[in-house]
Amino acid sequence: MTSHWQVPGDELDVAGWPEDEEHPFFPEGSRDKKLLRCPDPAPRSWLTAGHRYLFKQSRSIYPDQFWAEIAASRLSLLTGVLVPPAYAAWDSRDNVCAALIEWFYGYPNRSVQGFVSGGLFMKTMIENFDHAKGKQHNFGTIEALCHALSNNAPLHFAKDWMLIWSRMLTFDALLISQ
Image (tube, rainbow, N blue to C red; front, side, top):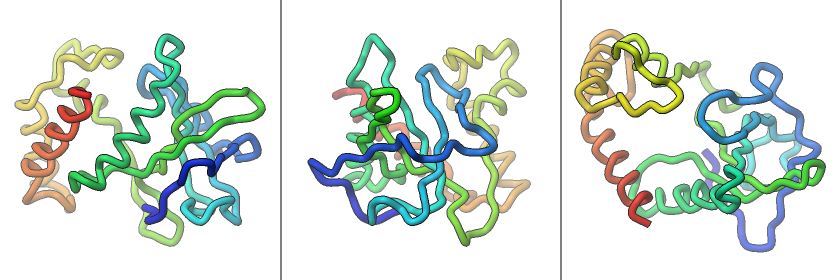
């Protein structure tokens, strides 16, 4: 993750950024989003050249919703919960503003990693799981999944998964209370 931050007045137009070859439109969640690649060289010092960034728009009924992603990213610095940096951006071709969120894996020159949506795990563990709403997931299922993963894979959080989950849940509660 980058260590520098966008400052007020530092506009970022992603109109010329190439779409990710594998996933130009990201299908997860309820908001429109697309996966972009940062140009090389990076247009700002706080961006990673060649890295993926998620351009996550607001829902039409909440046009300023993308700012919550940016606020969450900044709040993470105070709480110690790891959250990818998010920046204010716009696409001048479509005239739309969004949060530009640094993708959480696949950094250039680092080991290969993959991503599996938590919802896919929930579909296999909860009968009739509604992937669109995701309201049926619960801590018991998450606990069973984390135990299974930590017993069968070299996860970096294997020993501390419950502490990490409790921090994330507390972080979510802080965001929701705003």
